Length: 210
Length: 210
Image 1: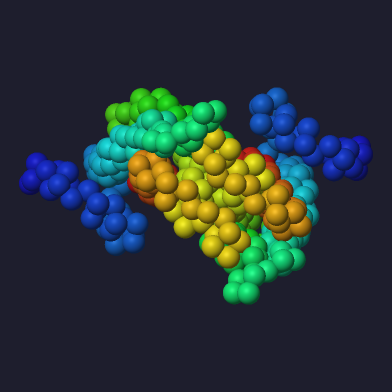
Image 2: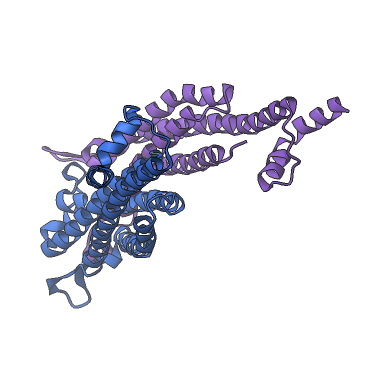
């Protein structure tokens, strides 16, 4: 009877935790039962920690991909004068330079945060690494958002320009450059979305007592 | 003697709290002393809450000022052809439209958050309003950062252009427009700085037990 109860509880730890939170589960203060409750809460948190680790890998790929795609963007027009050749490159525009630097920093932070994420998998009940990751993730989210927003603003202007103010759209000349840059901005917004879900997961995992 | 001690504690609650945190203050478990410790912690938190309220008023002014400055920016060139007149306005550039909307949302949120800030002044030990404000402030910080970064990217490009790609700088024609827009971007970065200090203060006030 005891054996069957414990195996059932291992299968549905979420429901157990929910019933405890609502106060409907019977409160048994025997030592074995309390230990078993801890194991159930630990399993639920371990699942969140594994999802956190996988999302972090995805965010690393998105951030480093954005930095690499922007950093290799370069296009030279096929005609030139005697003194000058027109060339579009990321390092002529400070916004894109900031984008590359910010994405490289975020990618480096994400790689360094992977060990802490592994610690939360091994010890699901430890709150220290989760709080640290939550705080640093918020800072990284702000940095990524600012880089992505600034990049998107320039990319939109490069595509469309401002006809009423007679501000030209350089994508008409630099088509390949614009495509690479647009891909980098899209990739950075993917990183922003992953950071937002990481923060929500961390906050949710910190909130529950069991 | 008791009267003098309590008046001293009201004057230097920070030092009392610091000594308690370091464990150097004598632990007296008599009922009256514990009540006095609570009052000291409440006074320290009340000061943080008052600073929070004042900073919130400043952030409201910065956000609404940015929205108003950007929303009234408009310049028409003094020459025109038969069919067309060149005009720079914030609603031709989607980035600036987003800037105005985001700043108006943030300003509205800040006005609506003032009552919650007053609640933390009246009841310094309540954690509910502080947690709510901390979460919503983080969201508002991200929105403000994205608007400010996107606006700054466009303003830089308008001032300097990209000479090597032959992308012109429209501030040479639209000087007044550029000044108004630059002021709005500076004001939005002031709001970003205030939000960052608000979040740090809230987290600090939530961390201390006393």
